[in-house]
Picture 1 (cartoon, rainbow over the protein chains, first blue to last red):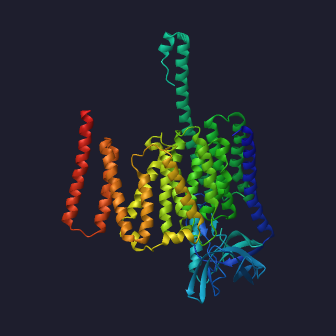
Picture 2 (cartoon, chains in turn red, cyan):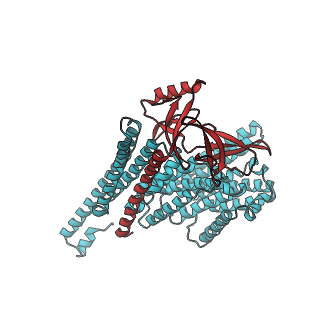
Picture 3 (cartoon, rainbow over the protein chains, first blue to last red):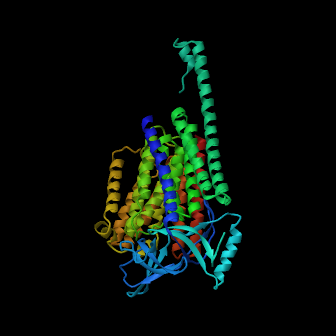
Length: 185
Length: 423
């Protein structure tokens, strides 16, 4: 390959790398600054990632939902998860619909169907949801203490655990975890 | 380059001084290439360690910085390595040590940037998504810097990606591995013209057949169950075409395709000798595969098979010592026969496997090649072990057969060693 082509390719690669990484920052910042801040209820934990350190595994409620029309949802399908306002900035699950339809509620998150399976053959089906956010990364030293607080809160049925998100046009940016009204940090 | 300098002096082609200068030149050249290879290895190890170290230290312990400081830190290694890339392209483009080092540093700095950004914003939770973007953002690096180390890392990355995603195809087909494999393959084939013996390229000759085999299984759900076996055999025959075609001059350790071909066809053939392989058979399943569902992939594989047979008959491949290509072709035929009559299919599979093992032993004995003999004996032992443990024979027969196998192994080896010593 002639050196001129290498220069063109290298310039293209550098621009592409900065564009892609920059666009991630732009997308996240736009969602944080212009999106609605909501808190949604969630469940339990997990360990480590080899590159990105210690994290909490966020499992929002619901993990799955039921439906009756077997053709409405398939594995890998992109869907809207609609939320309705509960109190303050806490939102609860309202419905799931295919992304080809207009979202039923003003606050919705783009997500995917992970699996589908019949509950009662030919009448009720169930689908598991794959949320676009599942890991909250935390500092290595602070992790054990935070993990203990988190697990204690989850085992105490009187305290609710929420994932705080900025949501804009279906895109969600995870902000943090809340135990009741207190942010976990 | 081997020249008898004394002969050139005797014929008056060069004088004594020129001969000394030529000697000195080649002495220096060999010393330089040895030290630069050592430097290259050290540099590559150093960059890999520094890259991984930076990811671990920064990513795990930077709570005290503000978000924008963290983002700034994420981009510093990338900026630095890209600037170094400009320097190398301008001043050191012909020095492989510089080119490899800077290519690796760009690879790792992109990895660092993605890791840290996804940590800051809690994005791309799945490891497959992380690897995918890492590969996309760096796939042109081998072309720009002629970097074998980055190409190898990308092949390993593709293998990692393939093993970290779902192979179930209820969802849209993921074209990413296919595209990346094609792009990396172009670079790899271009390298053949420069020689196949570089250490990092030799590692490609082992990594690529492994990744391609994983890729085949990734695509397997697009094929009917029985056709996956045909596709496997065709792929392994393809490895054989490479092993005995462009790679025929390579030593055994530089020719991973040969091992992949041998092991692949042998393991597939062994599986075809078991009862379970044939009991679930549905007659005509392969023919249904060819006419319904997704005919594109079976068509591609069958065209590939046609080309491979044509290639073989054009005599461009020197005769193979292990005849695994023929075993592979025979097994494909057996699969079709077995679809109509499973018992015949199983019988023929056993027959061909046994014949291939016997042929290996025969070739080894006549060629006095201990490796080939023992490979044949090993193949025979594995077949007998599998067959005997799958069937109900008395322990006396099992014991006697093992003693006979042991004696055969000992006897043939002793005979060849004795023959070689006599010569």
